[in-house]
Amino acid sequence: MDLKLLGHQIKAAKSIAILTGAGVSAESGVATFRGQDGLWENYSLEDVATPEGFRRNPELVWSFYNQRIRQRLSVKPNPGHHALSQLQKLVPQVTLITQNIDGLHQEAHCTDILEMHGNLMRVRCVRCRSKSDIDEPFKEALPRCDCGGLLRPDVVWFGEILDEKILQTCFEKSATCDVFLCIGTSSLVSPASTLAGLAKNNGAYTCEMNLEPTPNSHLMDLILTGKSGEILPKLISLLESLL
Ligand code: BV8
Ligand code: ZN
Image 1 (spheres, rainbow, N blue to C red):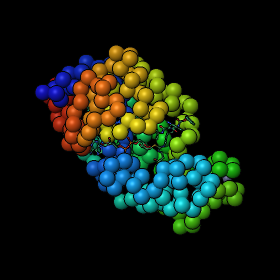
Image 2 (cartoon, rainbow, N blue to C red):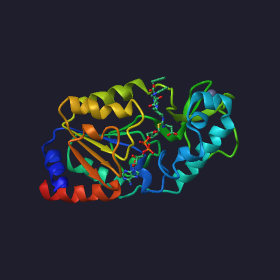
Image 3 (tube, helix red, strand yellow):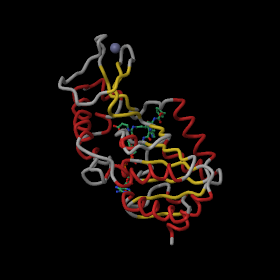
């Protein structure tokens, strides 16, 4: 029944904004951040996901990210990623805002993707700021740019500002959409966690898909509890019967 409510809202929507978090990649085998055997269980966020941590111990940060690069290369998009790609084919104007840096939405052929926190498979030089894509982990403990500068992952760490243009577009899409889906995120990290409130304040129909409640659950018109890799394919089958 609940899924039907969402299906009709999506069918009637002119524009849809979707925010995804690590939970969408969990069924691909990518570790989430929080919860049991989450990434922050074995590393402290301050040591491996802040500019201060990188300044203090860049080798530790690179061992953390090389491990995530290795894991990324061993996984594939799951049915939840593929369902989001099908959703974009079924209905117009679906913007995919992701906190994830794993690039699995791209691999599942999603489009209109806004990567709020950067991408694991891209690095940038701290000296000349040049960026380059990578396709494997680094062998050296401290990878360097041709200019001699230290390379860092091209991701947004805690305490760092997000790309201005990407952030503005996230705000604009969230503030003007008719339906806002919040999938697989603990809604603890800002500014990503503010997007649902923006959508709600602007009259959007809001839906959260998660295994558990989050600090944003009170903003939701509909809460679908379960795995995104199971709920989203069911949503697609329903939409195919409605459209
Ligand atoms: C900023 C990139 C302006 C790196 C990430 C106090 C002091 C200083 C700053 C702050 C402060 N208080 C708040 C802040 C701002 C701070 C912040 O929010 N901190 C938090 C910890 C309180 N934010 C920032 O610093 C941002 N910048 O605000 O700039 C500024 C500047 C200076 C000072 C102030 C402000 C930058 C934030 C970006 C950080 N970078 N990632 C990397 O990935 O390595 S954030 C990191 O967390 C990931 O991107 C991740 O996506 C994100 C959020 O986590 P989730 O995706 O939600 O994942 P999580 O594991 O938490 O949850 C998974 C969920 O999925 C769970 O709910 C689970 O139930 C569910 N789930 C699991 N399996 C499934 C599922 N759901 C469905 N199906 C399943 N199968
Ligand atoms: Zn350089």
